[in-house]
Image (cartoon, rainbow, N blue to C red; front, top):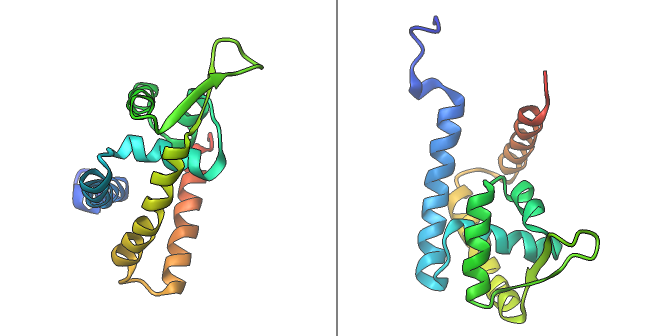
Length: 148
């Protein structure tokens, strides 16, 4: 099939994007109704919950979201007392952000729900297929980060 004849429905980046959006939308509905969190807010909380304090710049890299989305998410989370800001001794211009006790409670309450949703969404795949899928995603992510 020539480039002119290629269909968007066959274009892998498009399929990956719409599938990712469909999964995110499904999860977002759950987090929004139960915890009042939007996707960017949960992504920031998930990173902080998994690996501790980060600067906003580090969160941009870890979440793969743009800095405006990370900034807005952090403001909302701070207003809700789910994260706290502390000075960065290495860089006087930035701050470290970390989950508060309340933020850790919410993170802890969400994780079992997230894992259950993962099982529901990916239950159509065998354990072996899920592992292969994760490996393939990691390879694609690596390839997308490499420079030719």
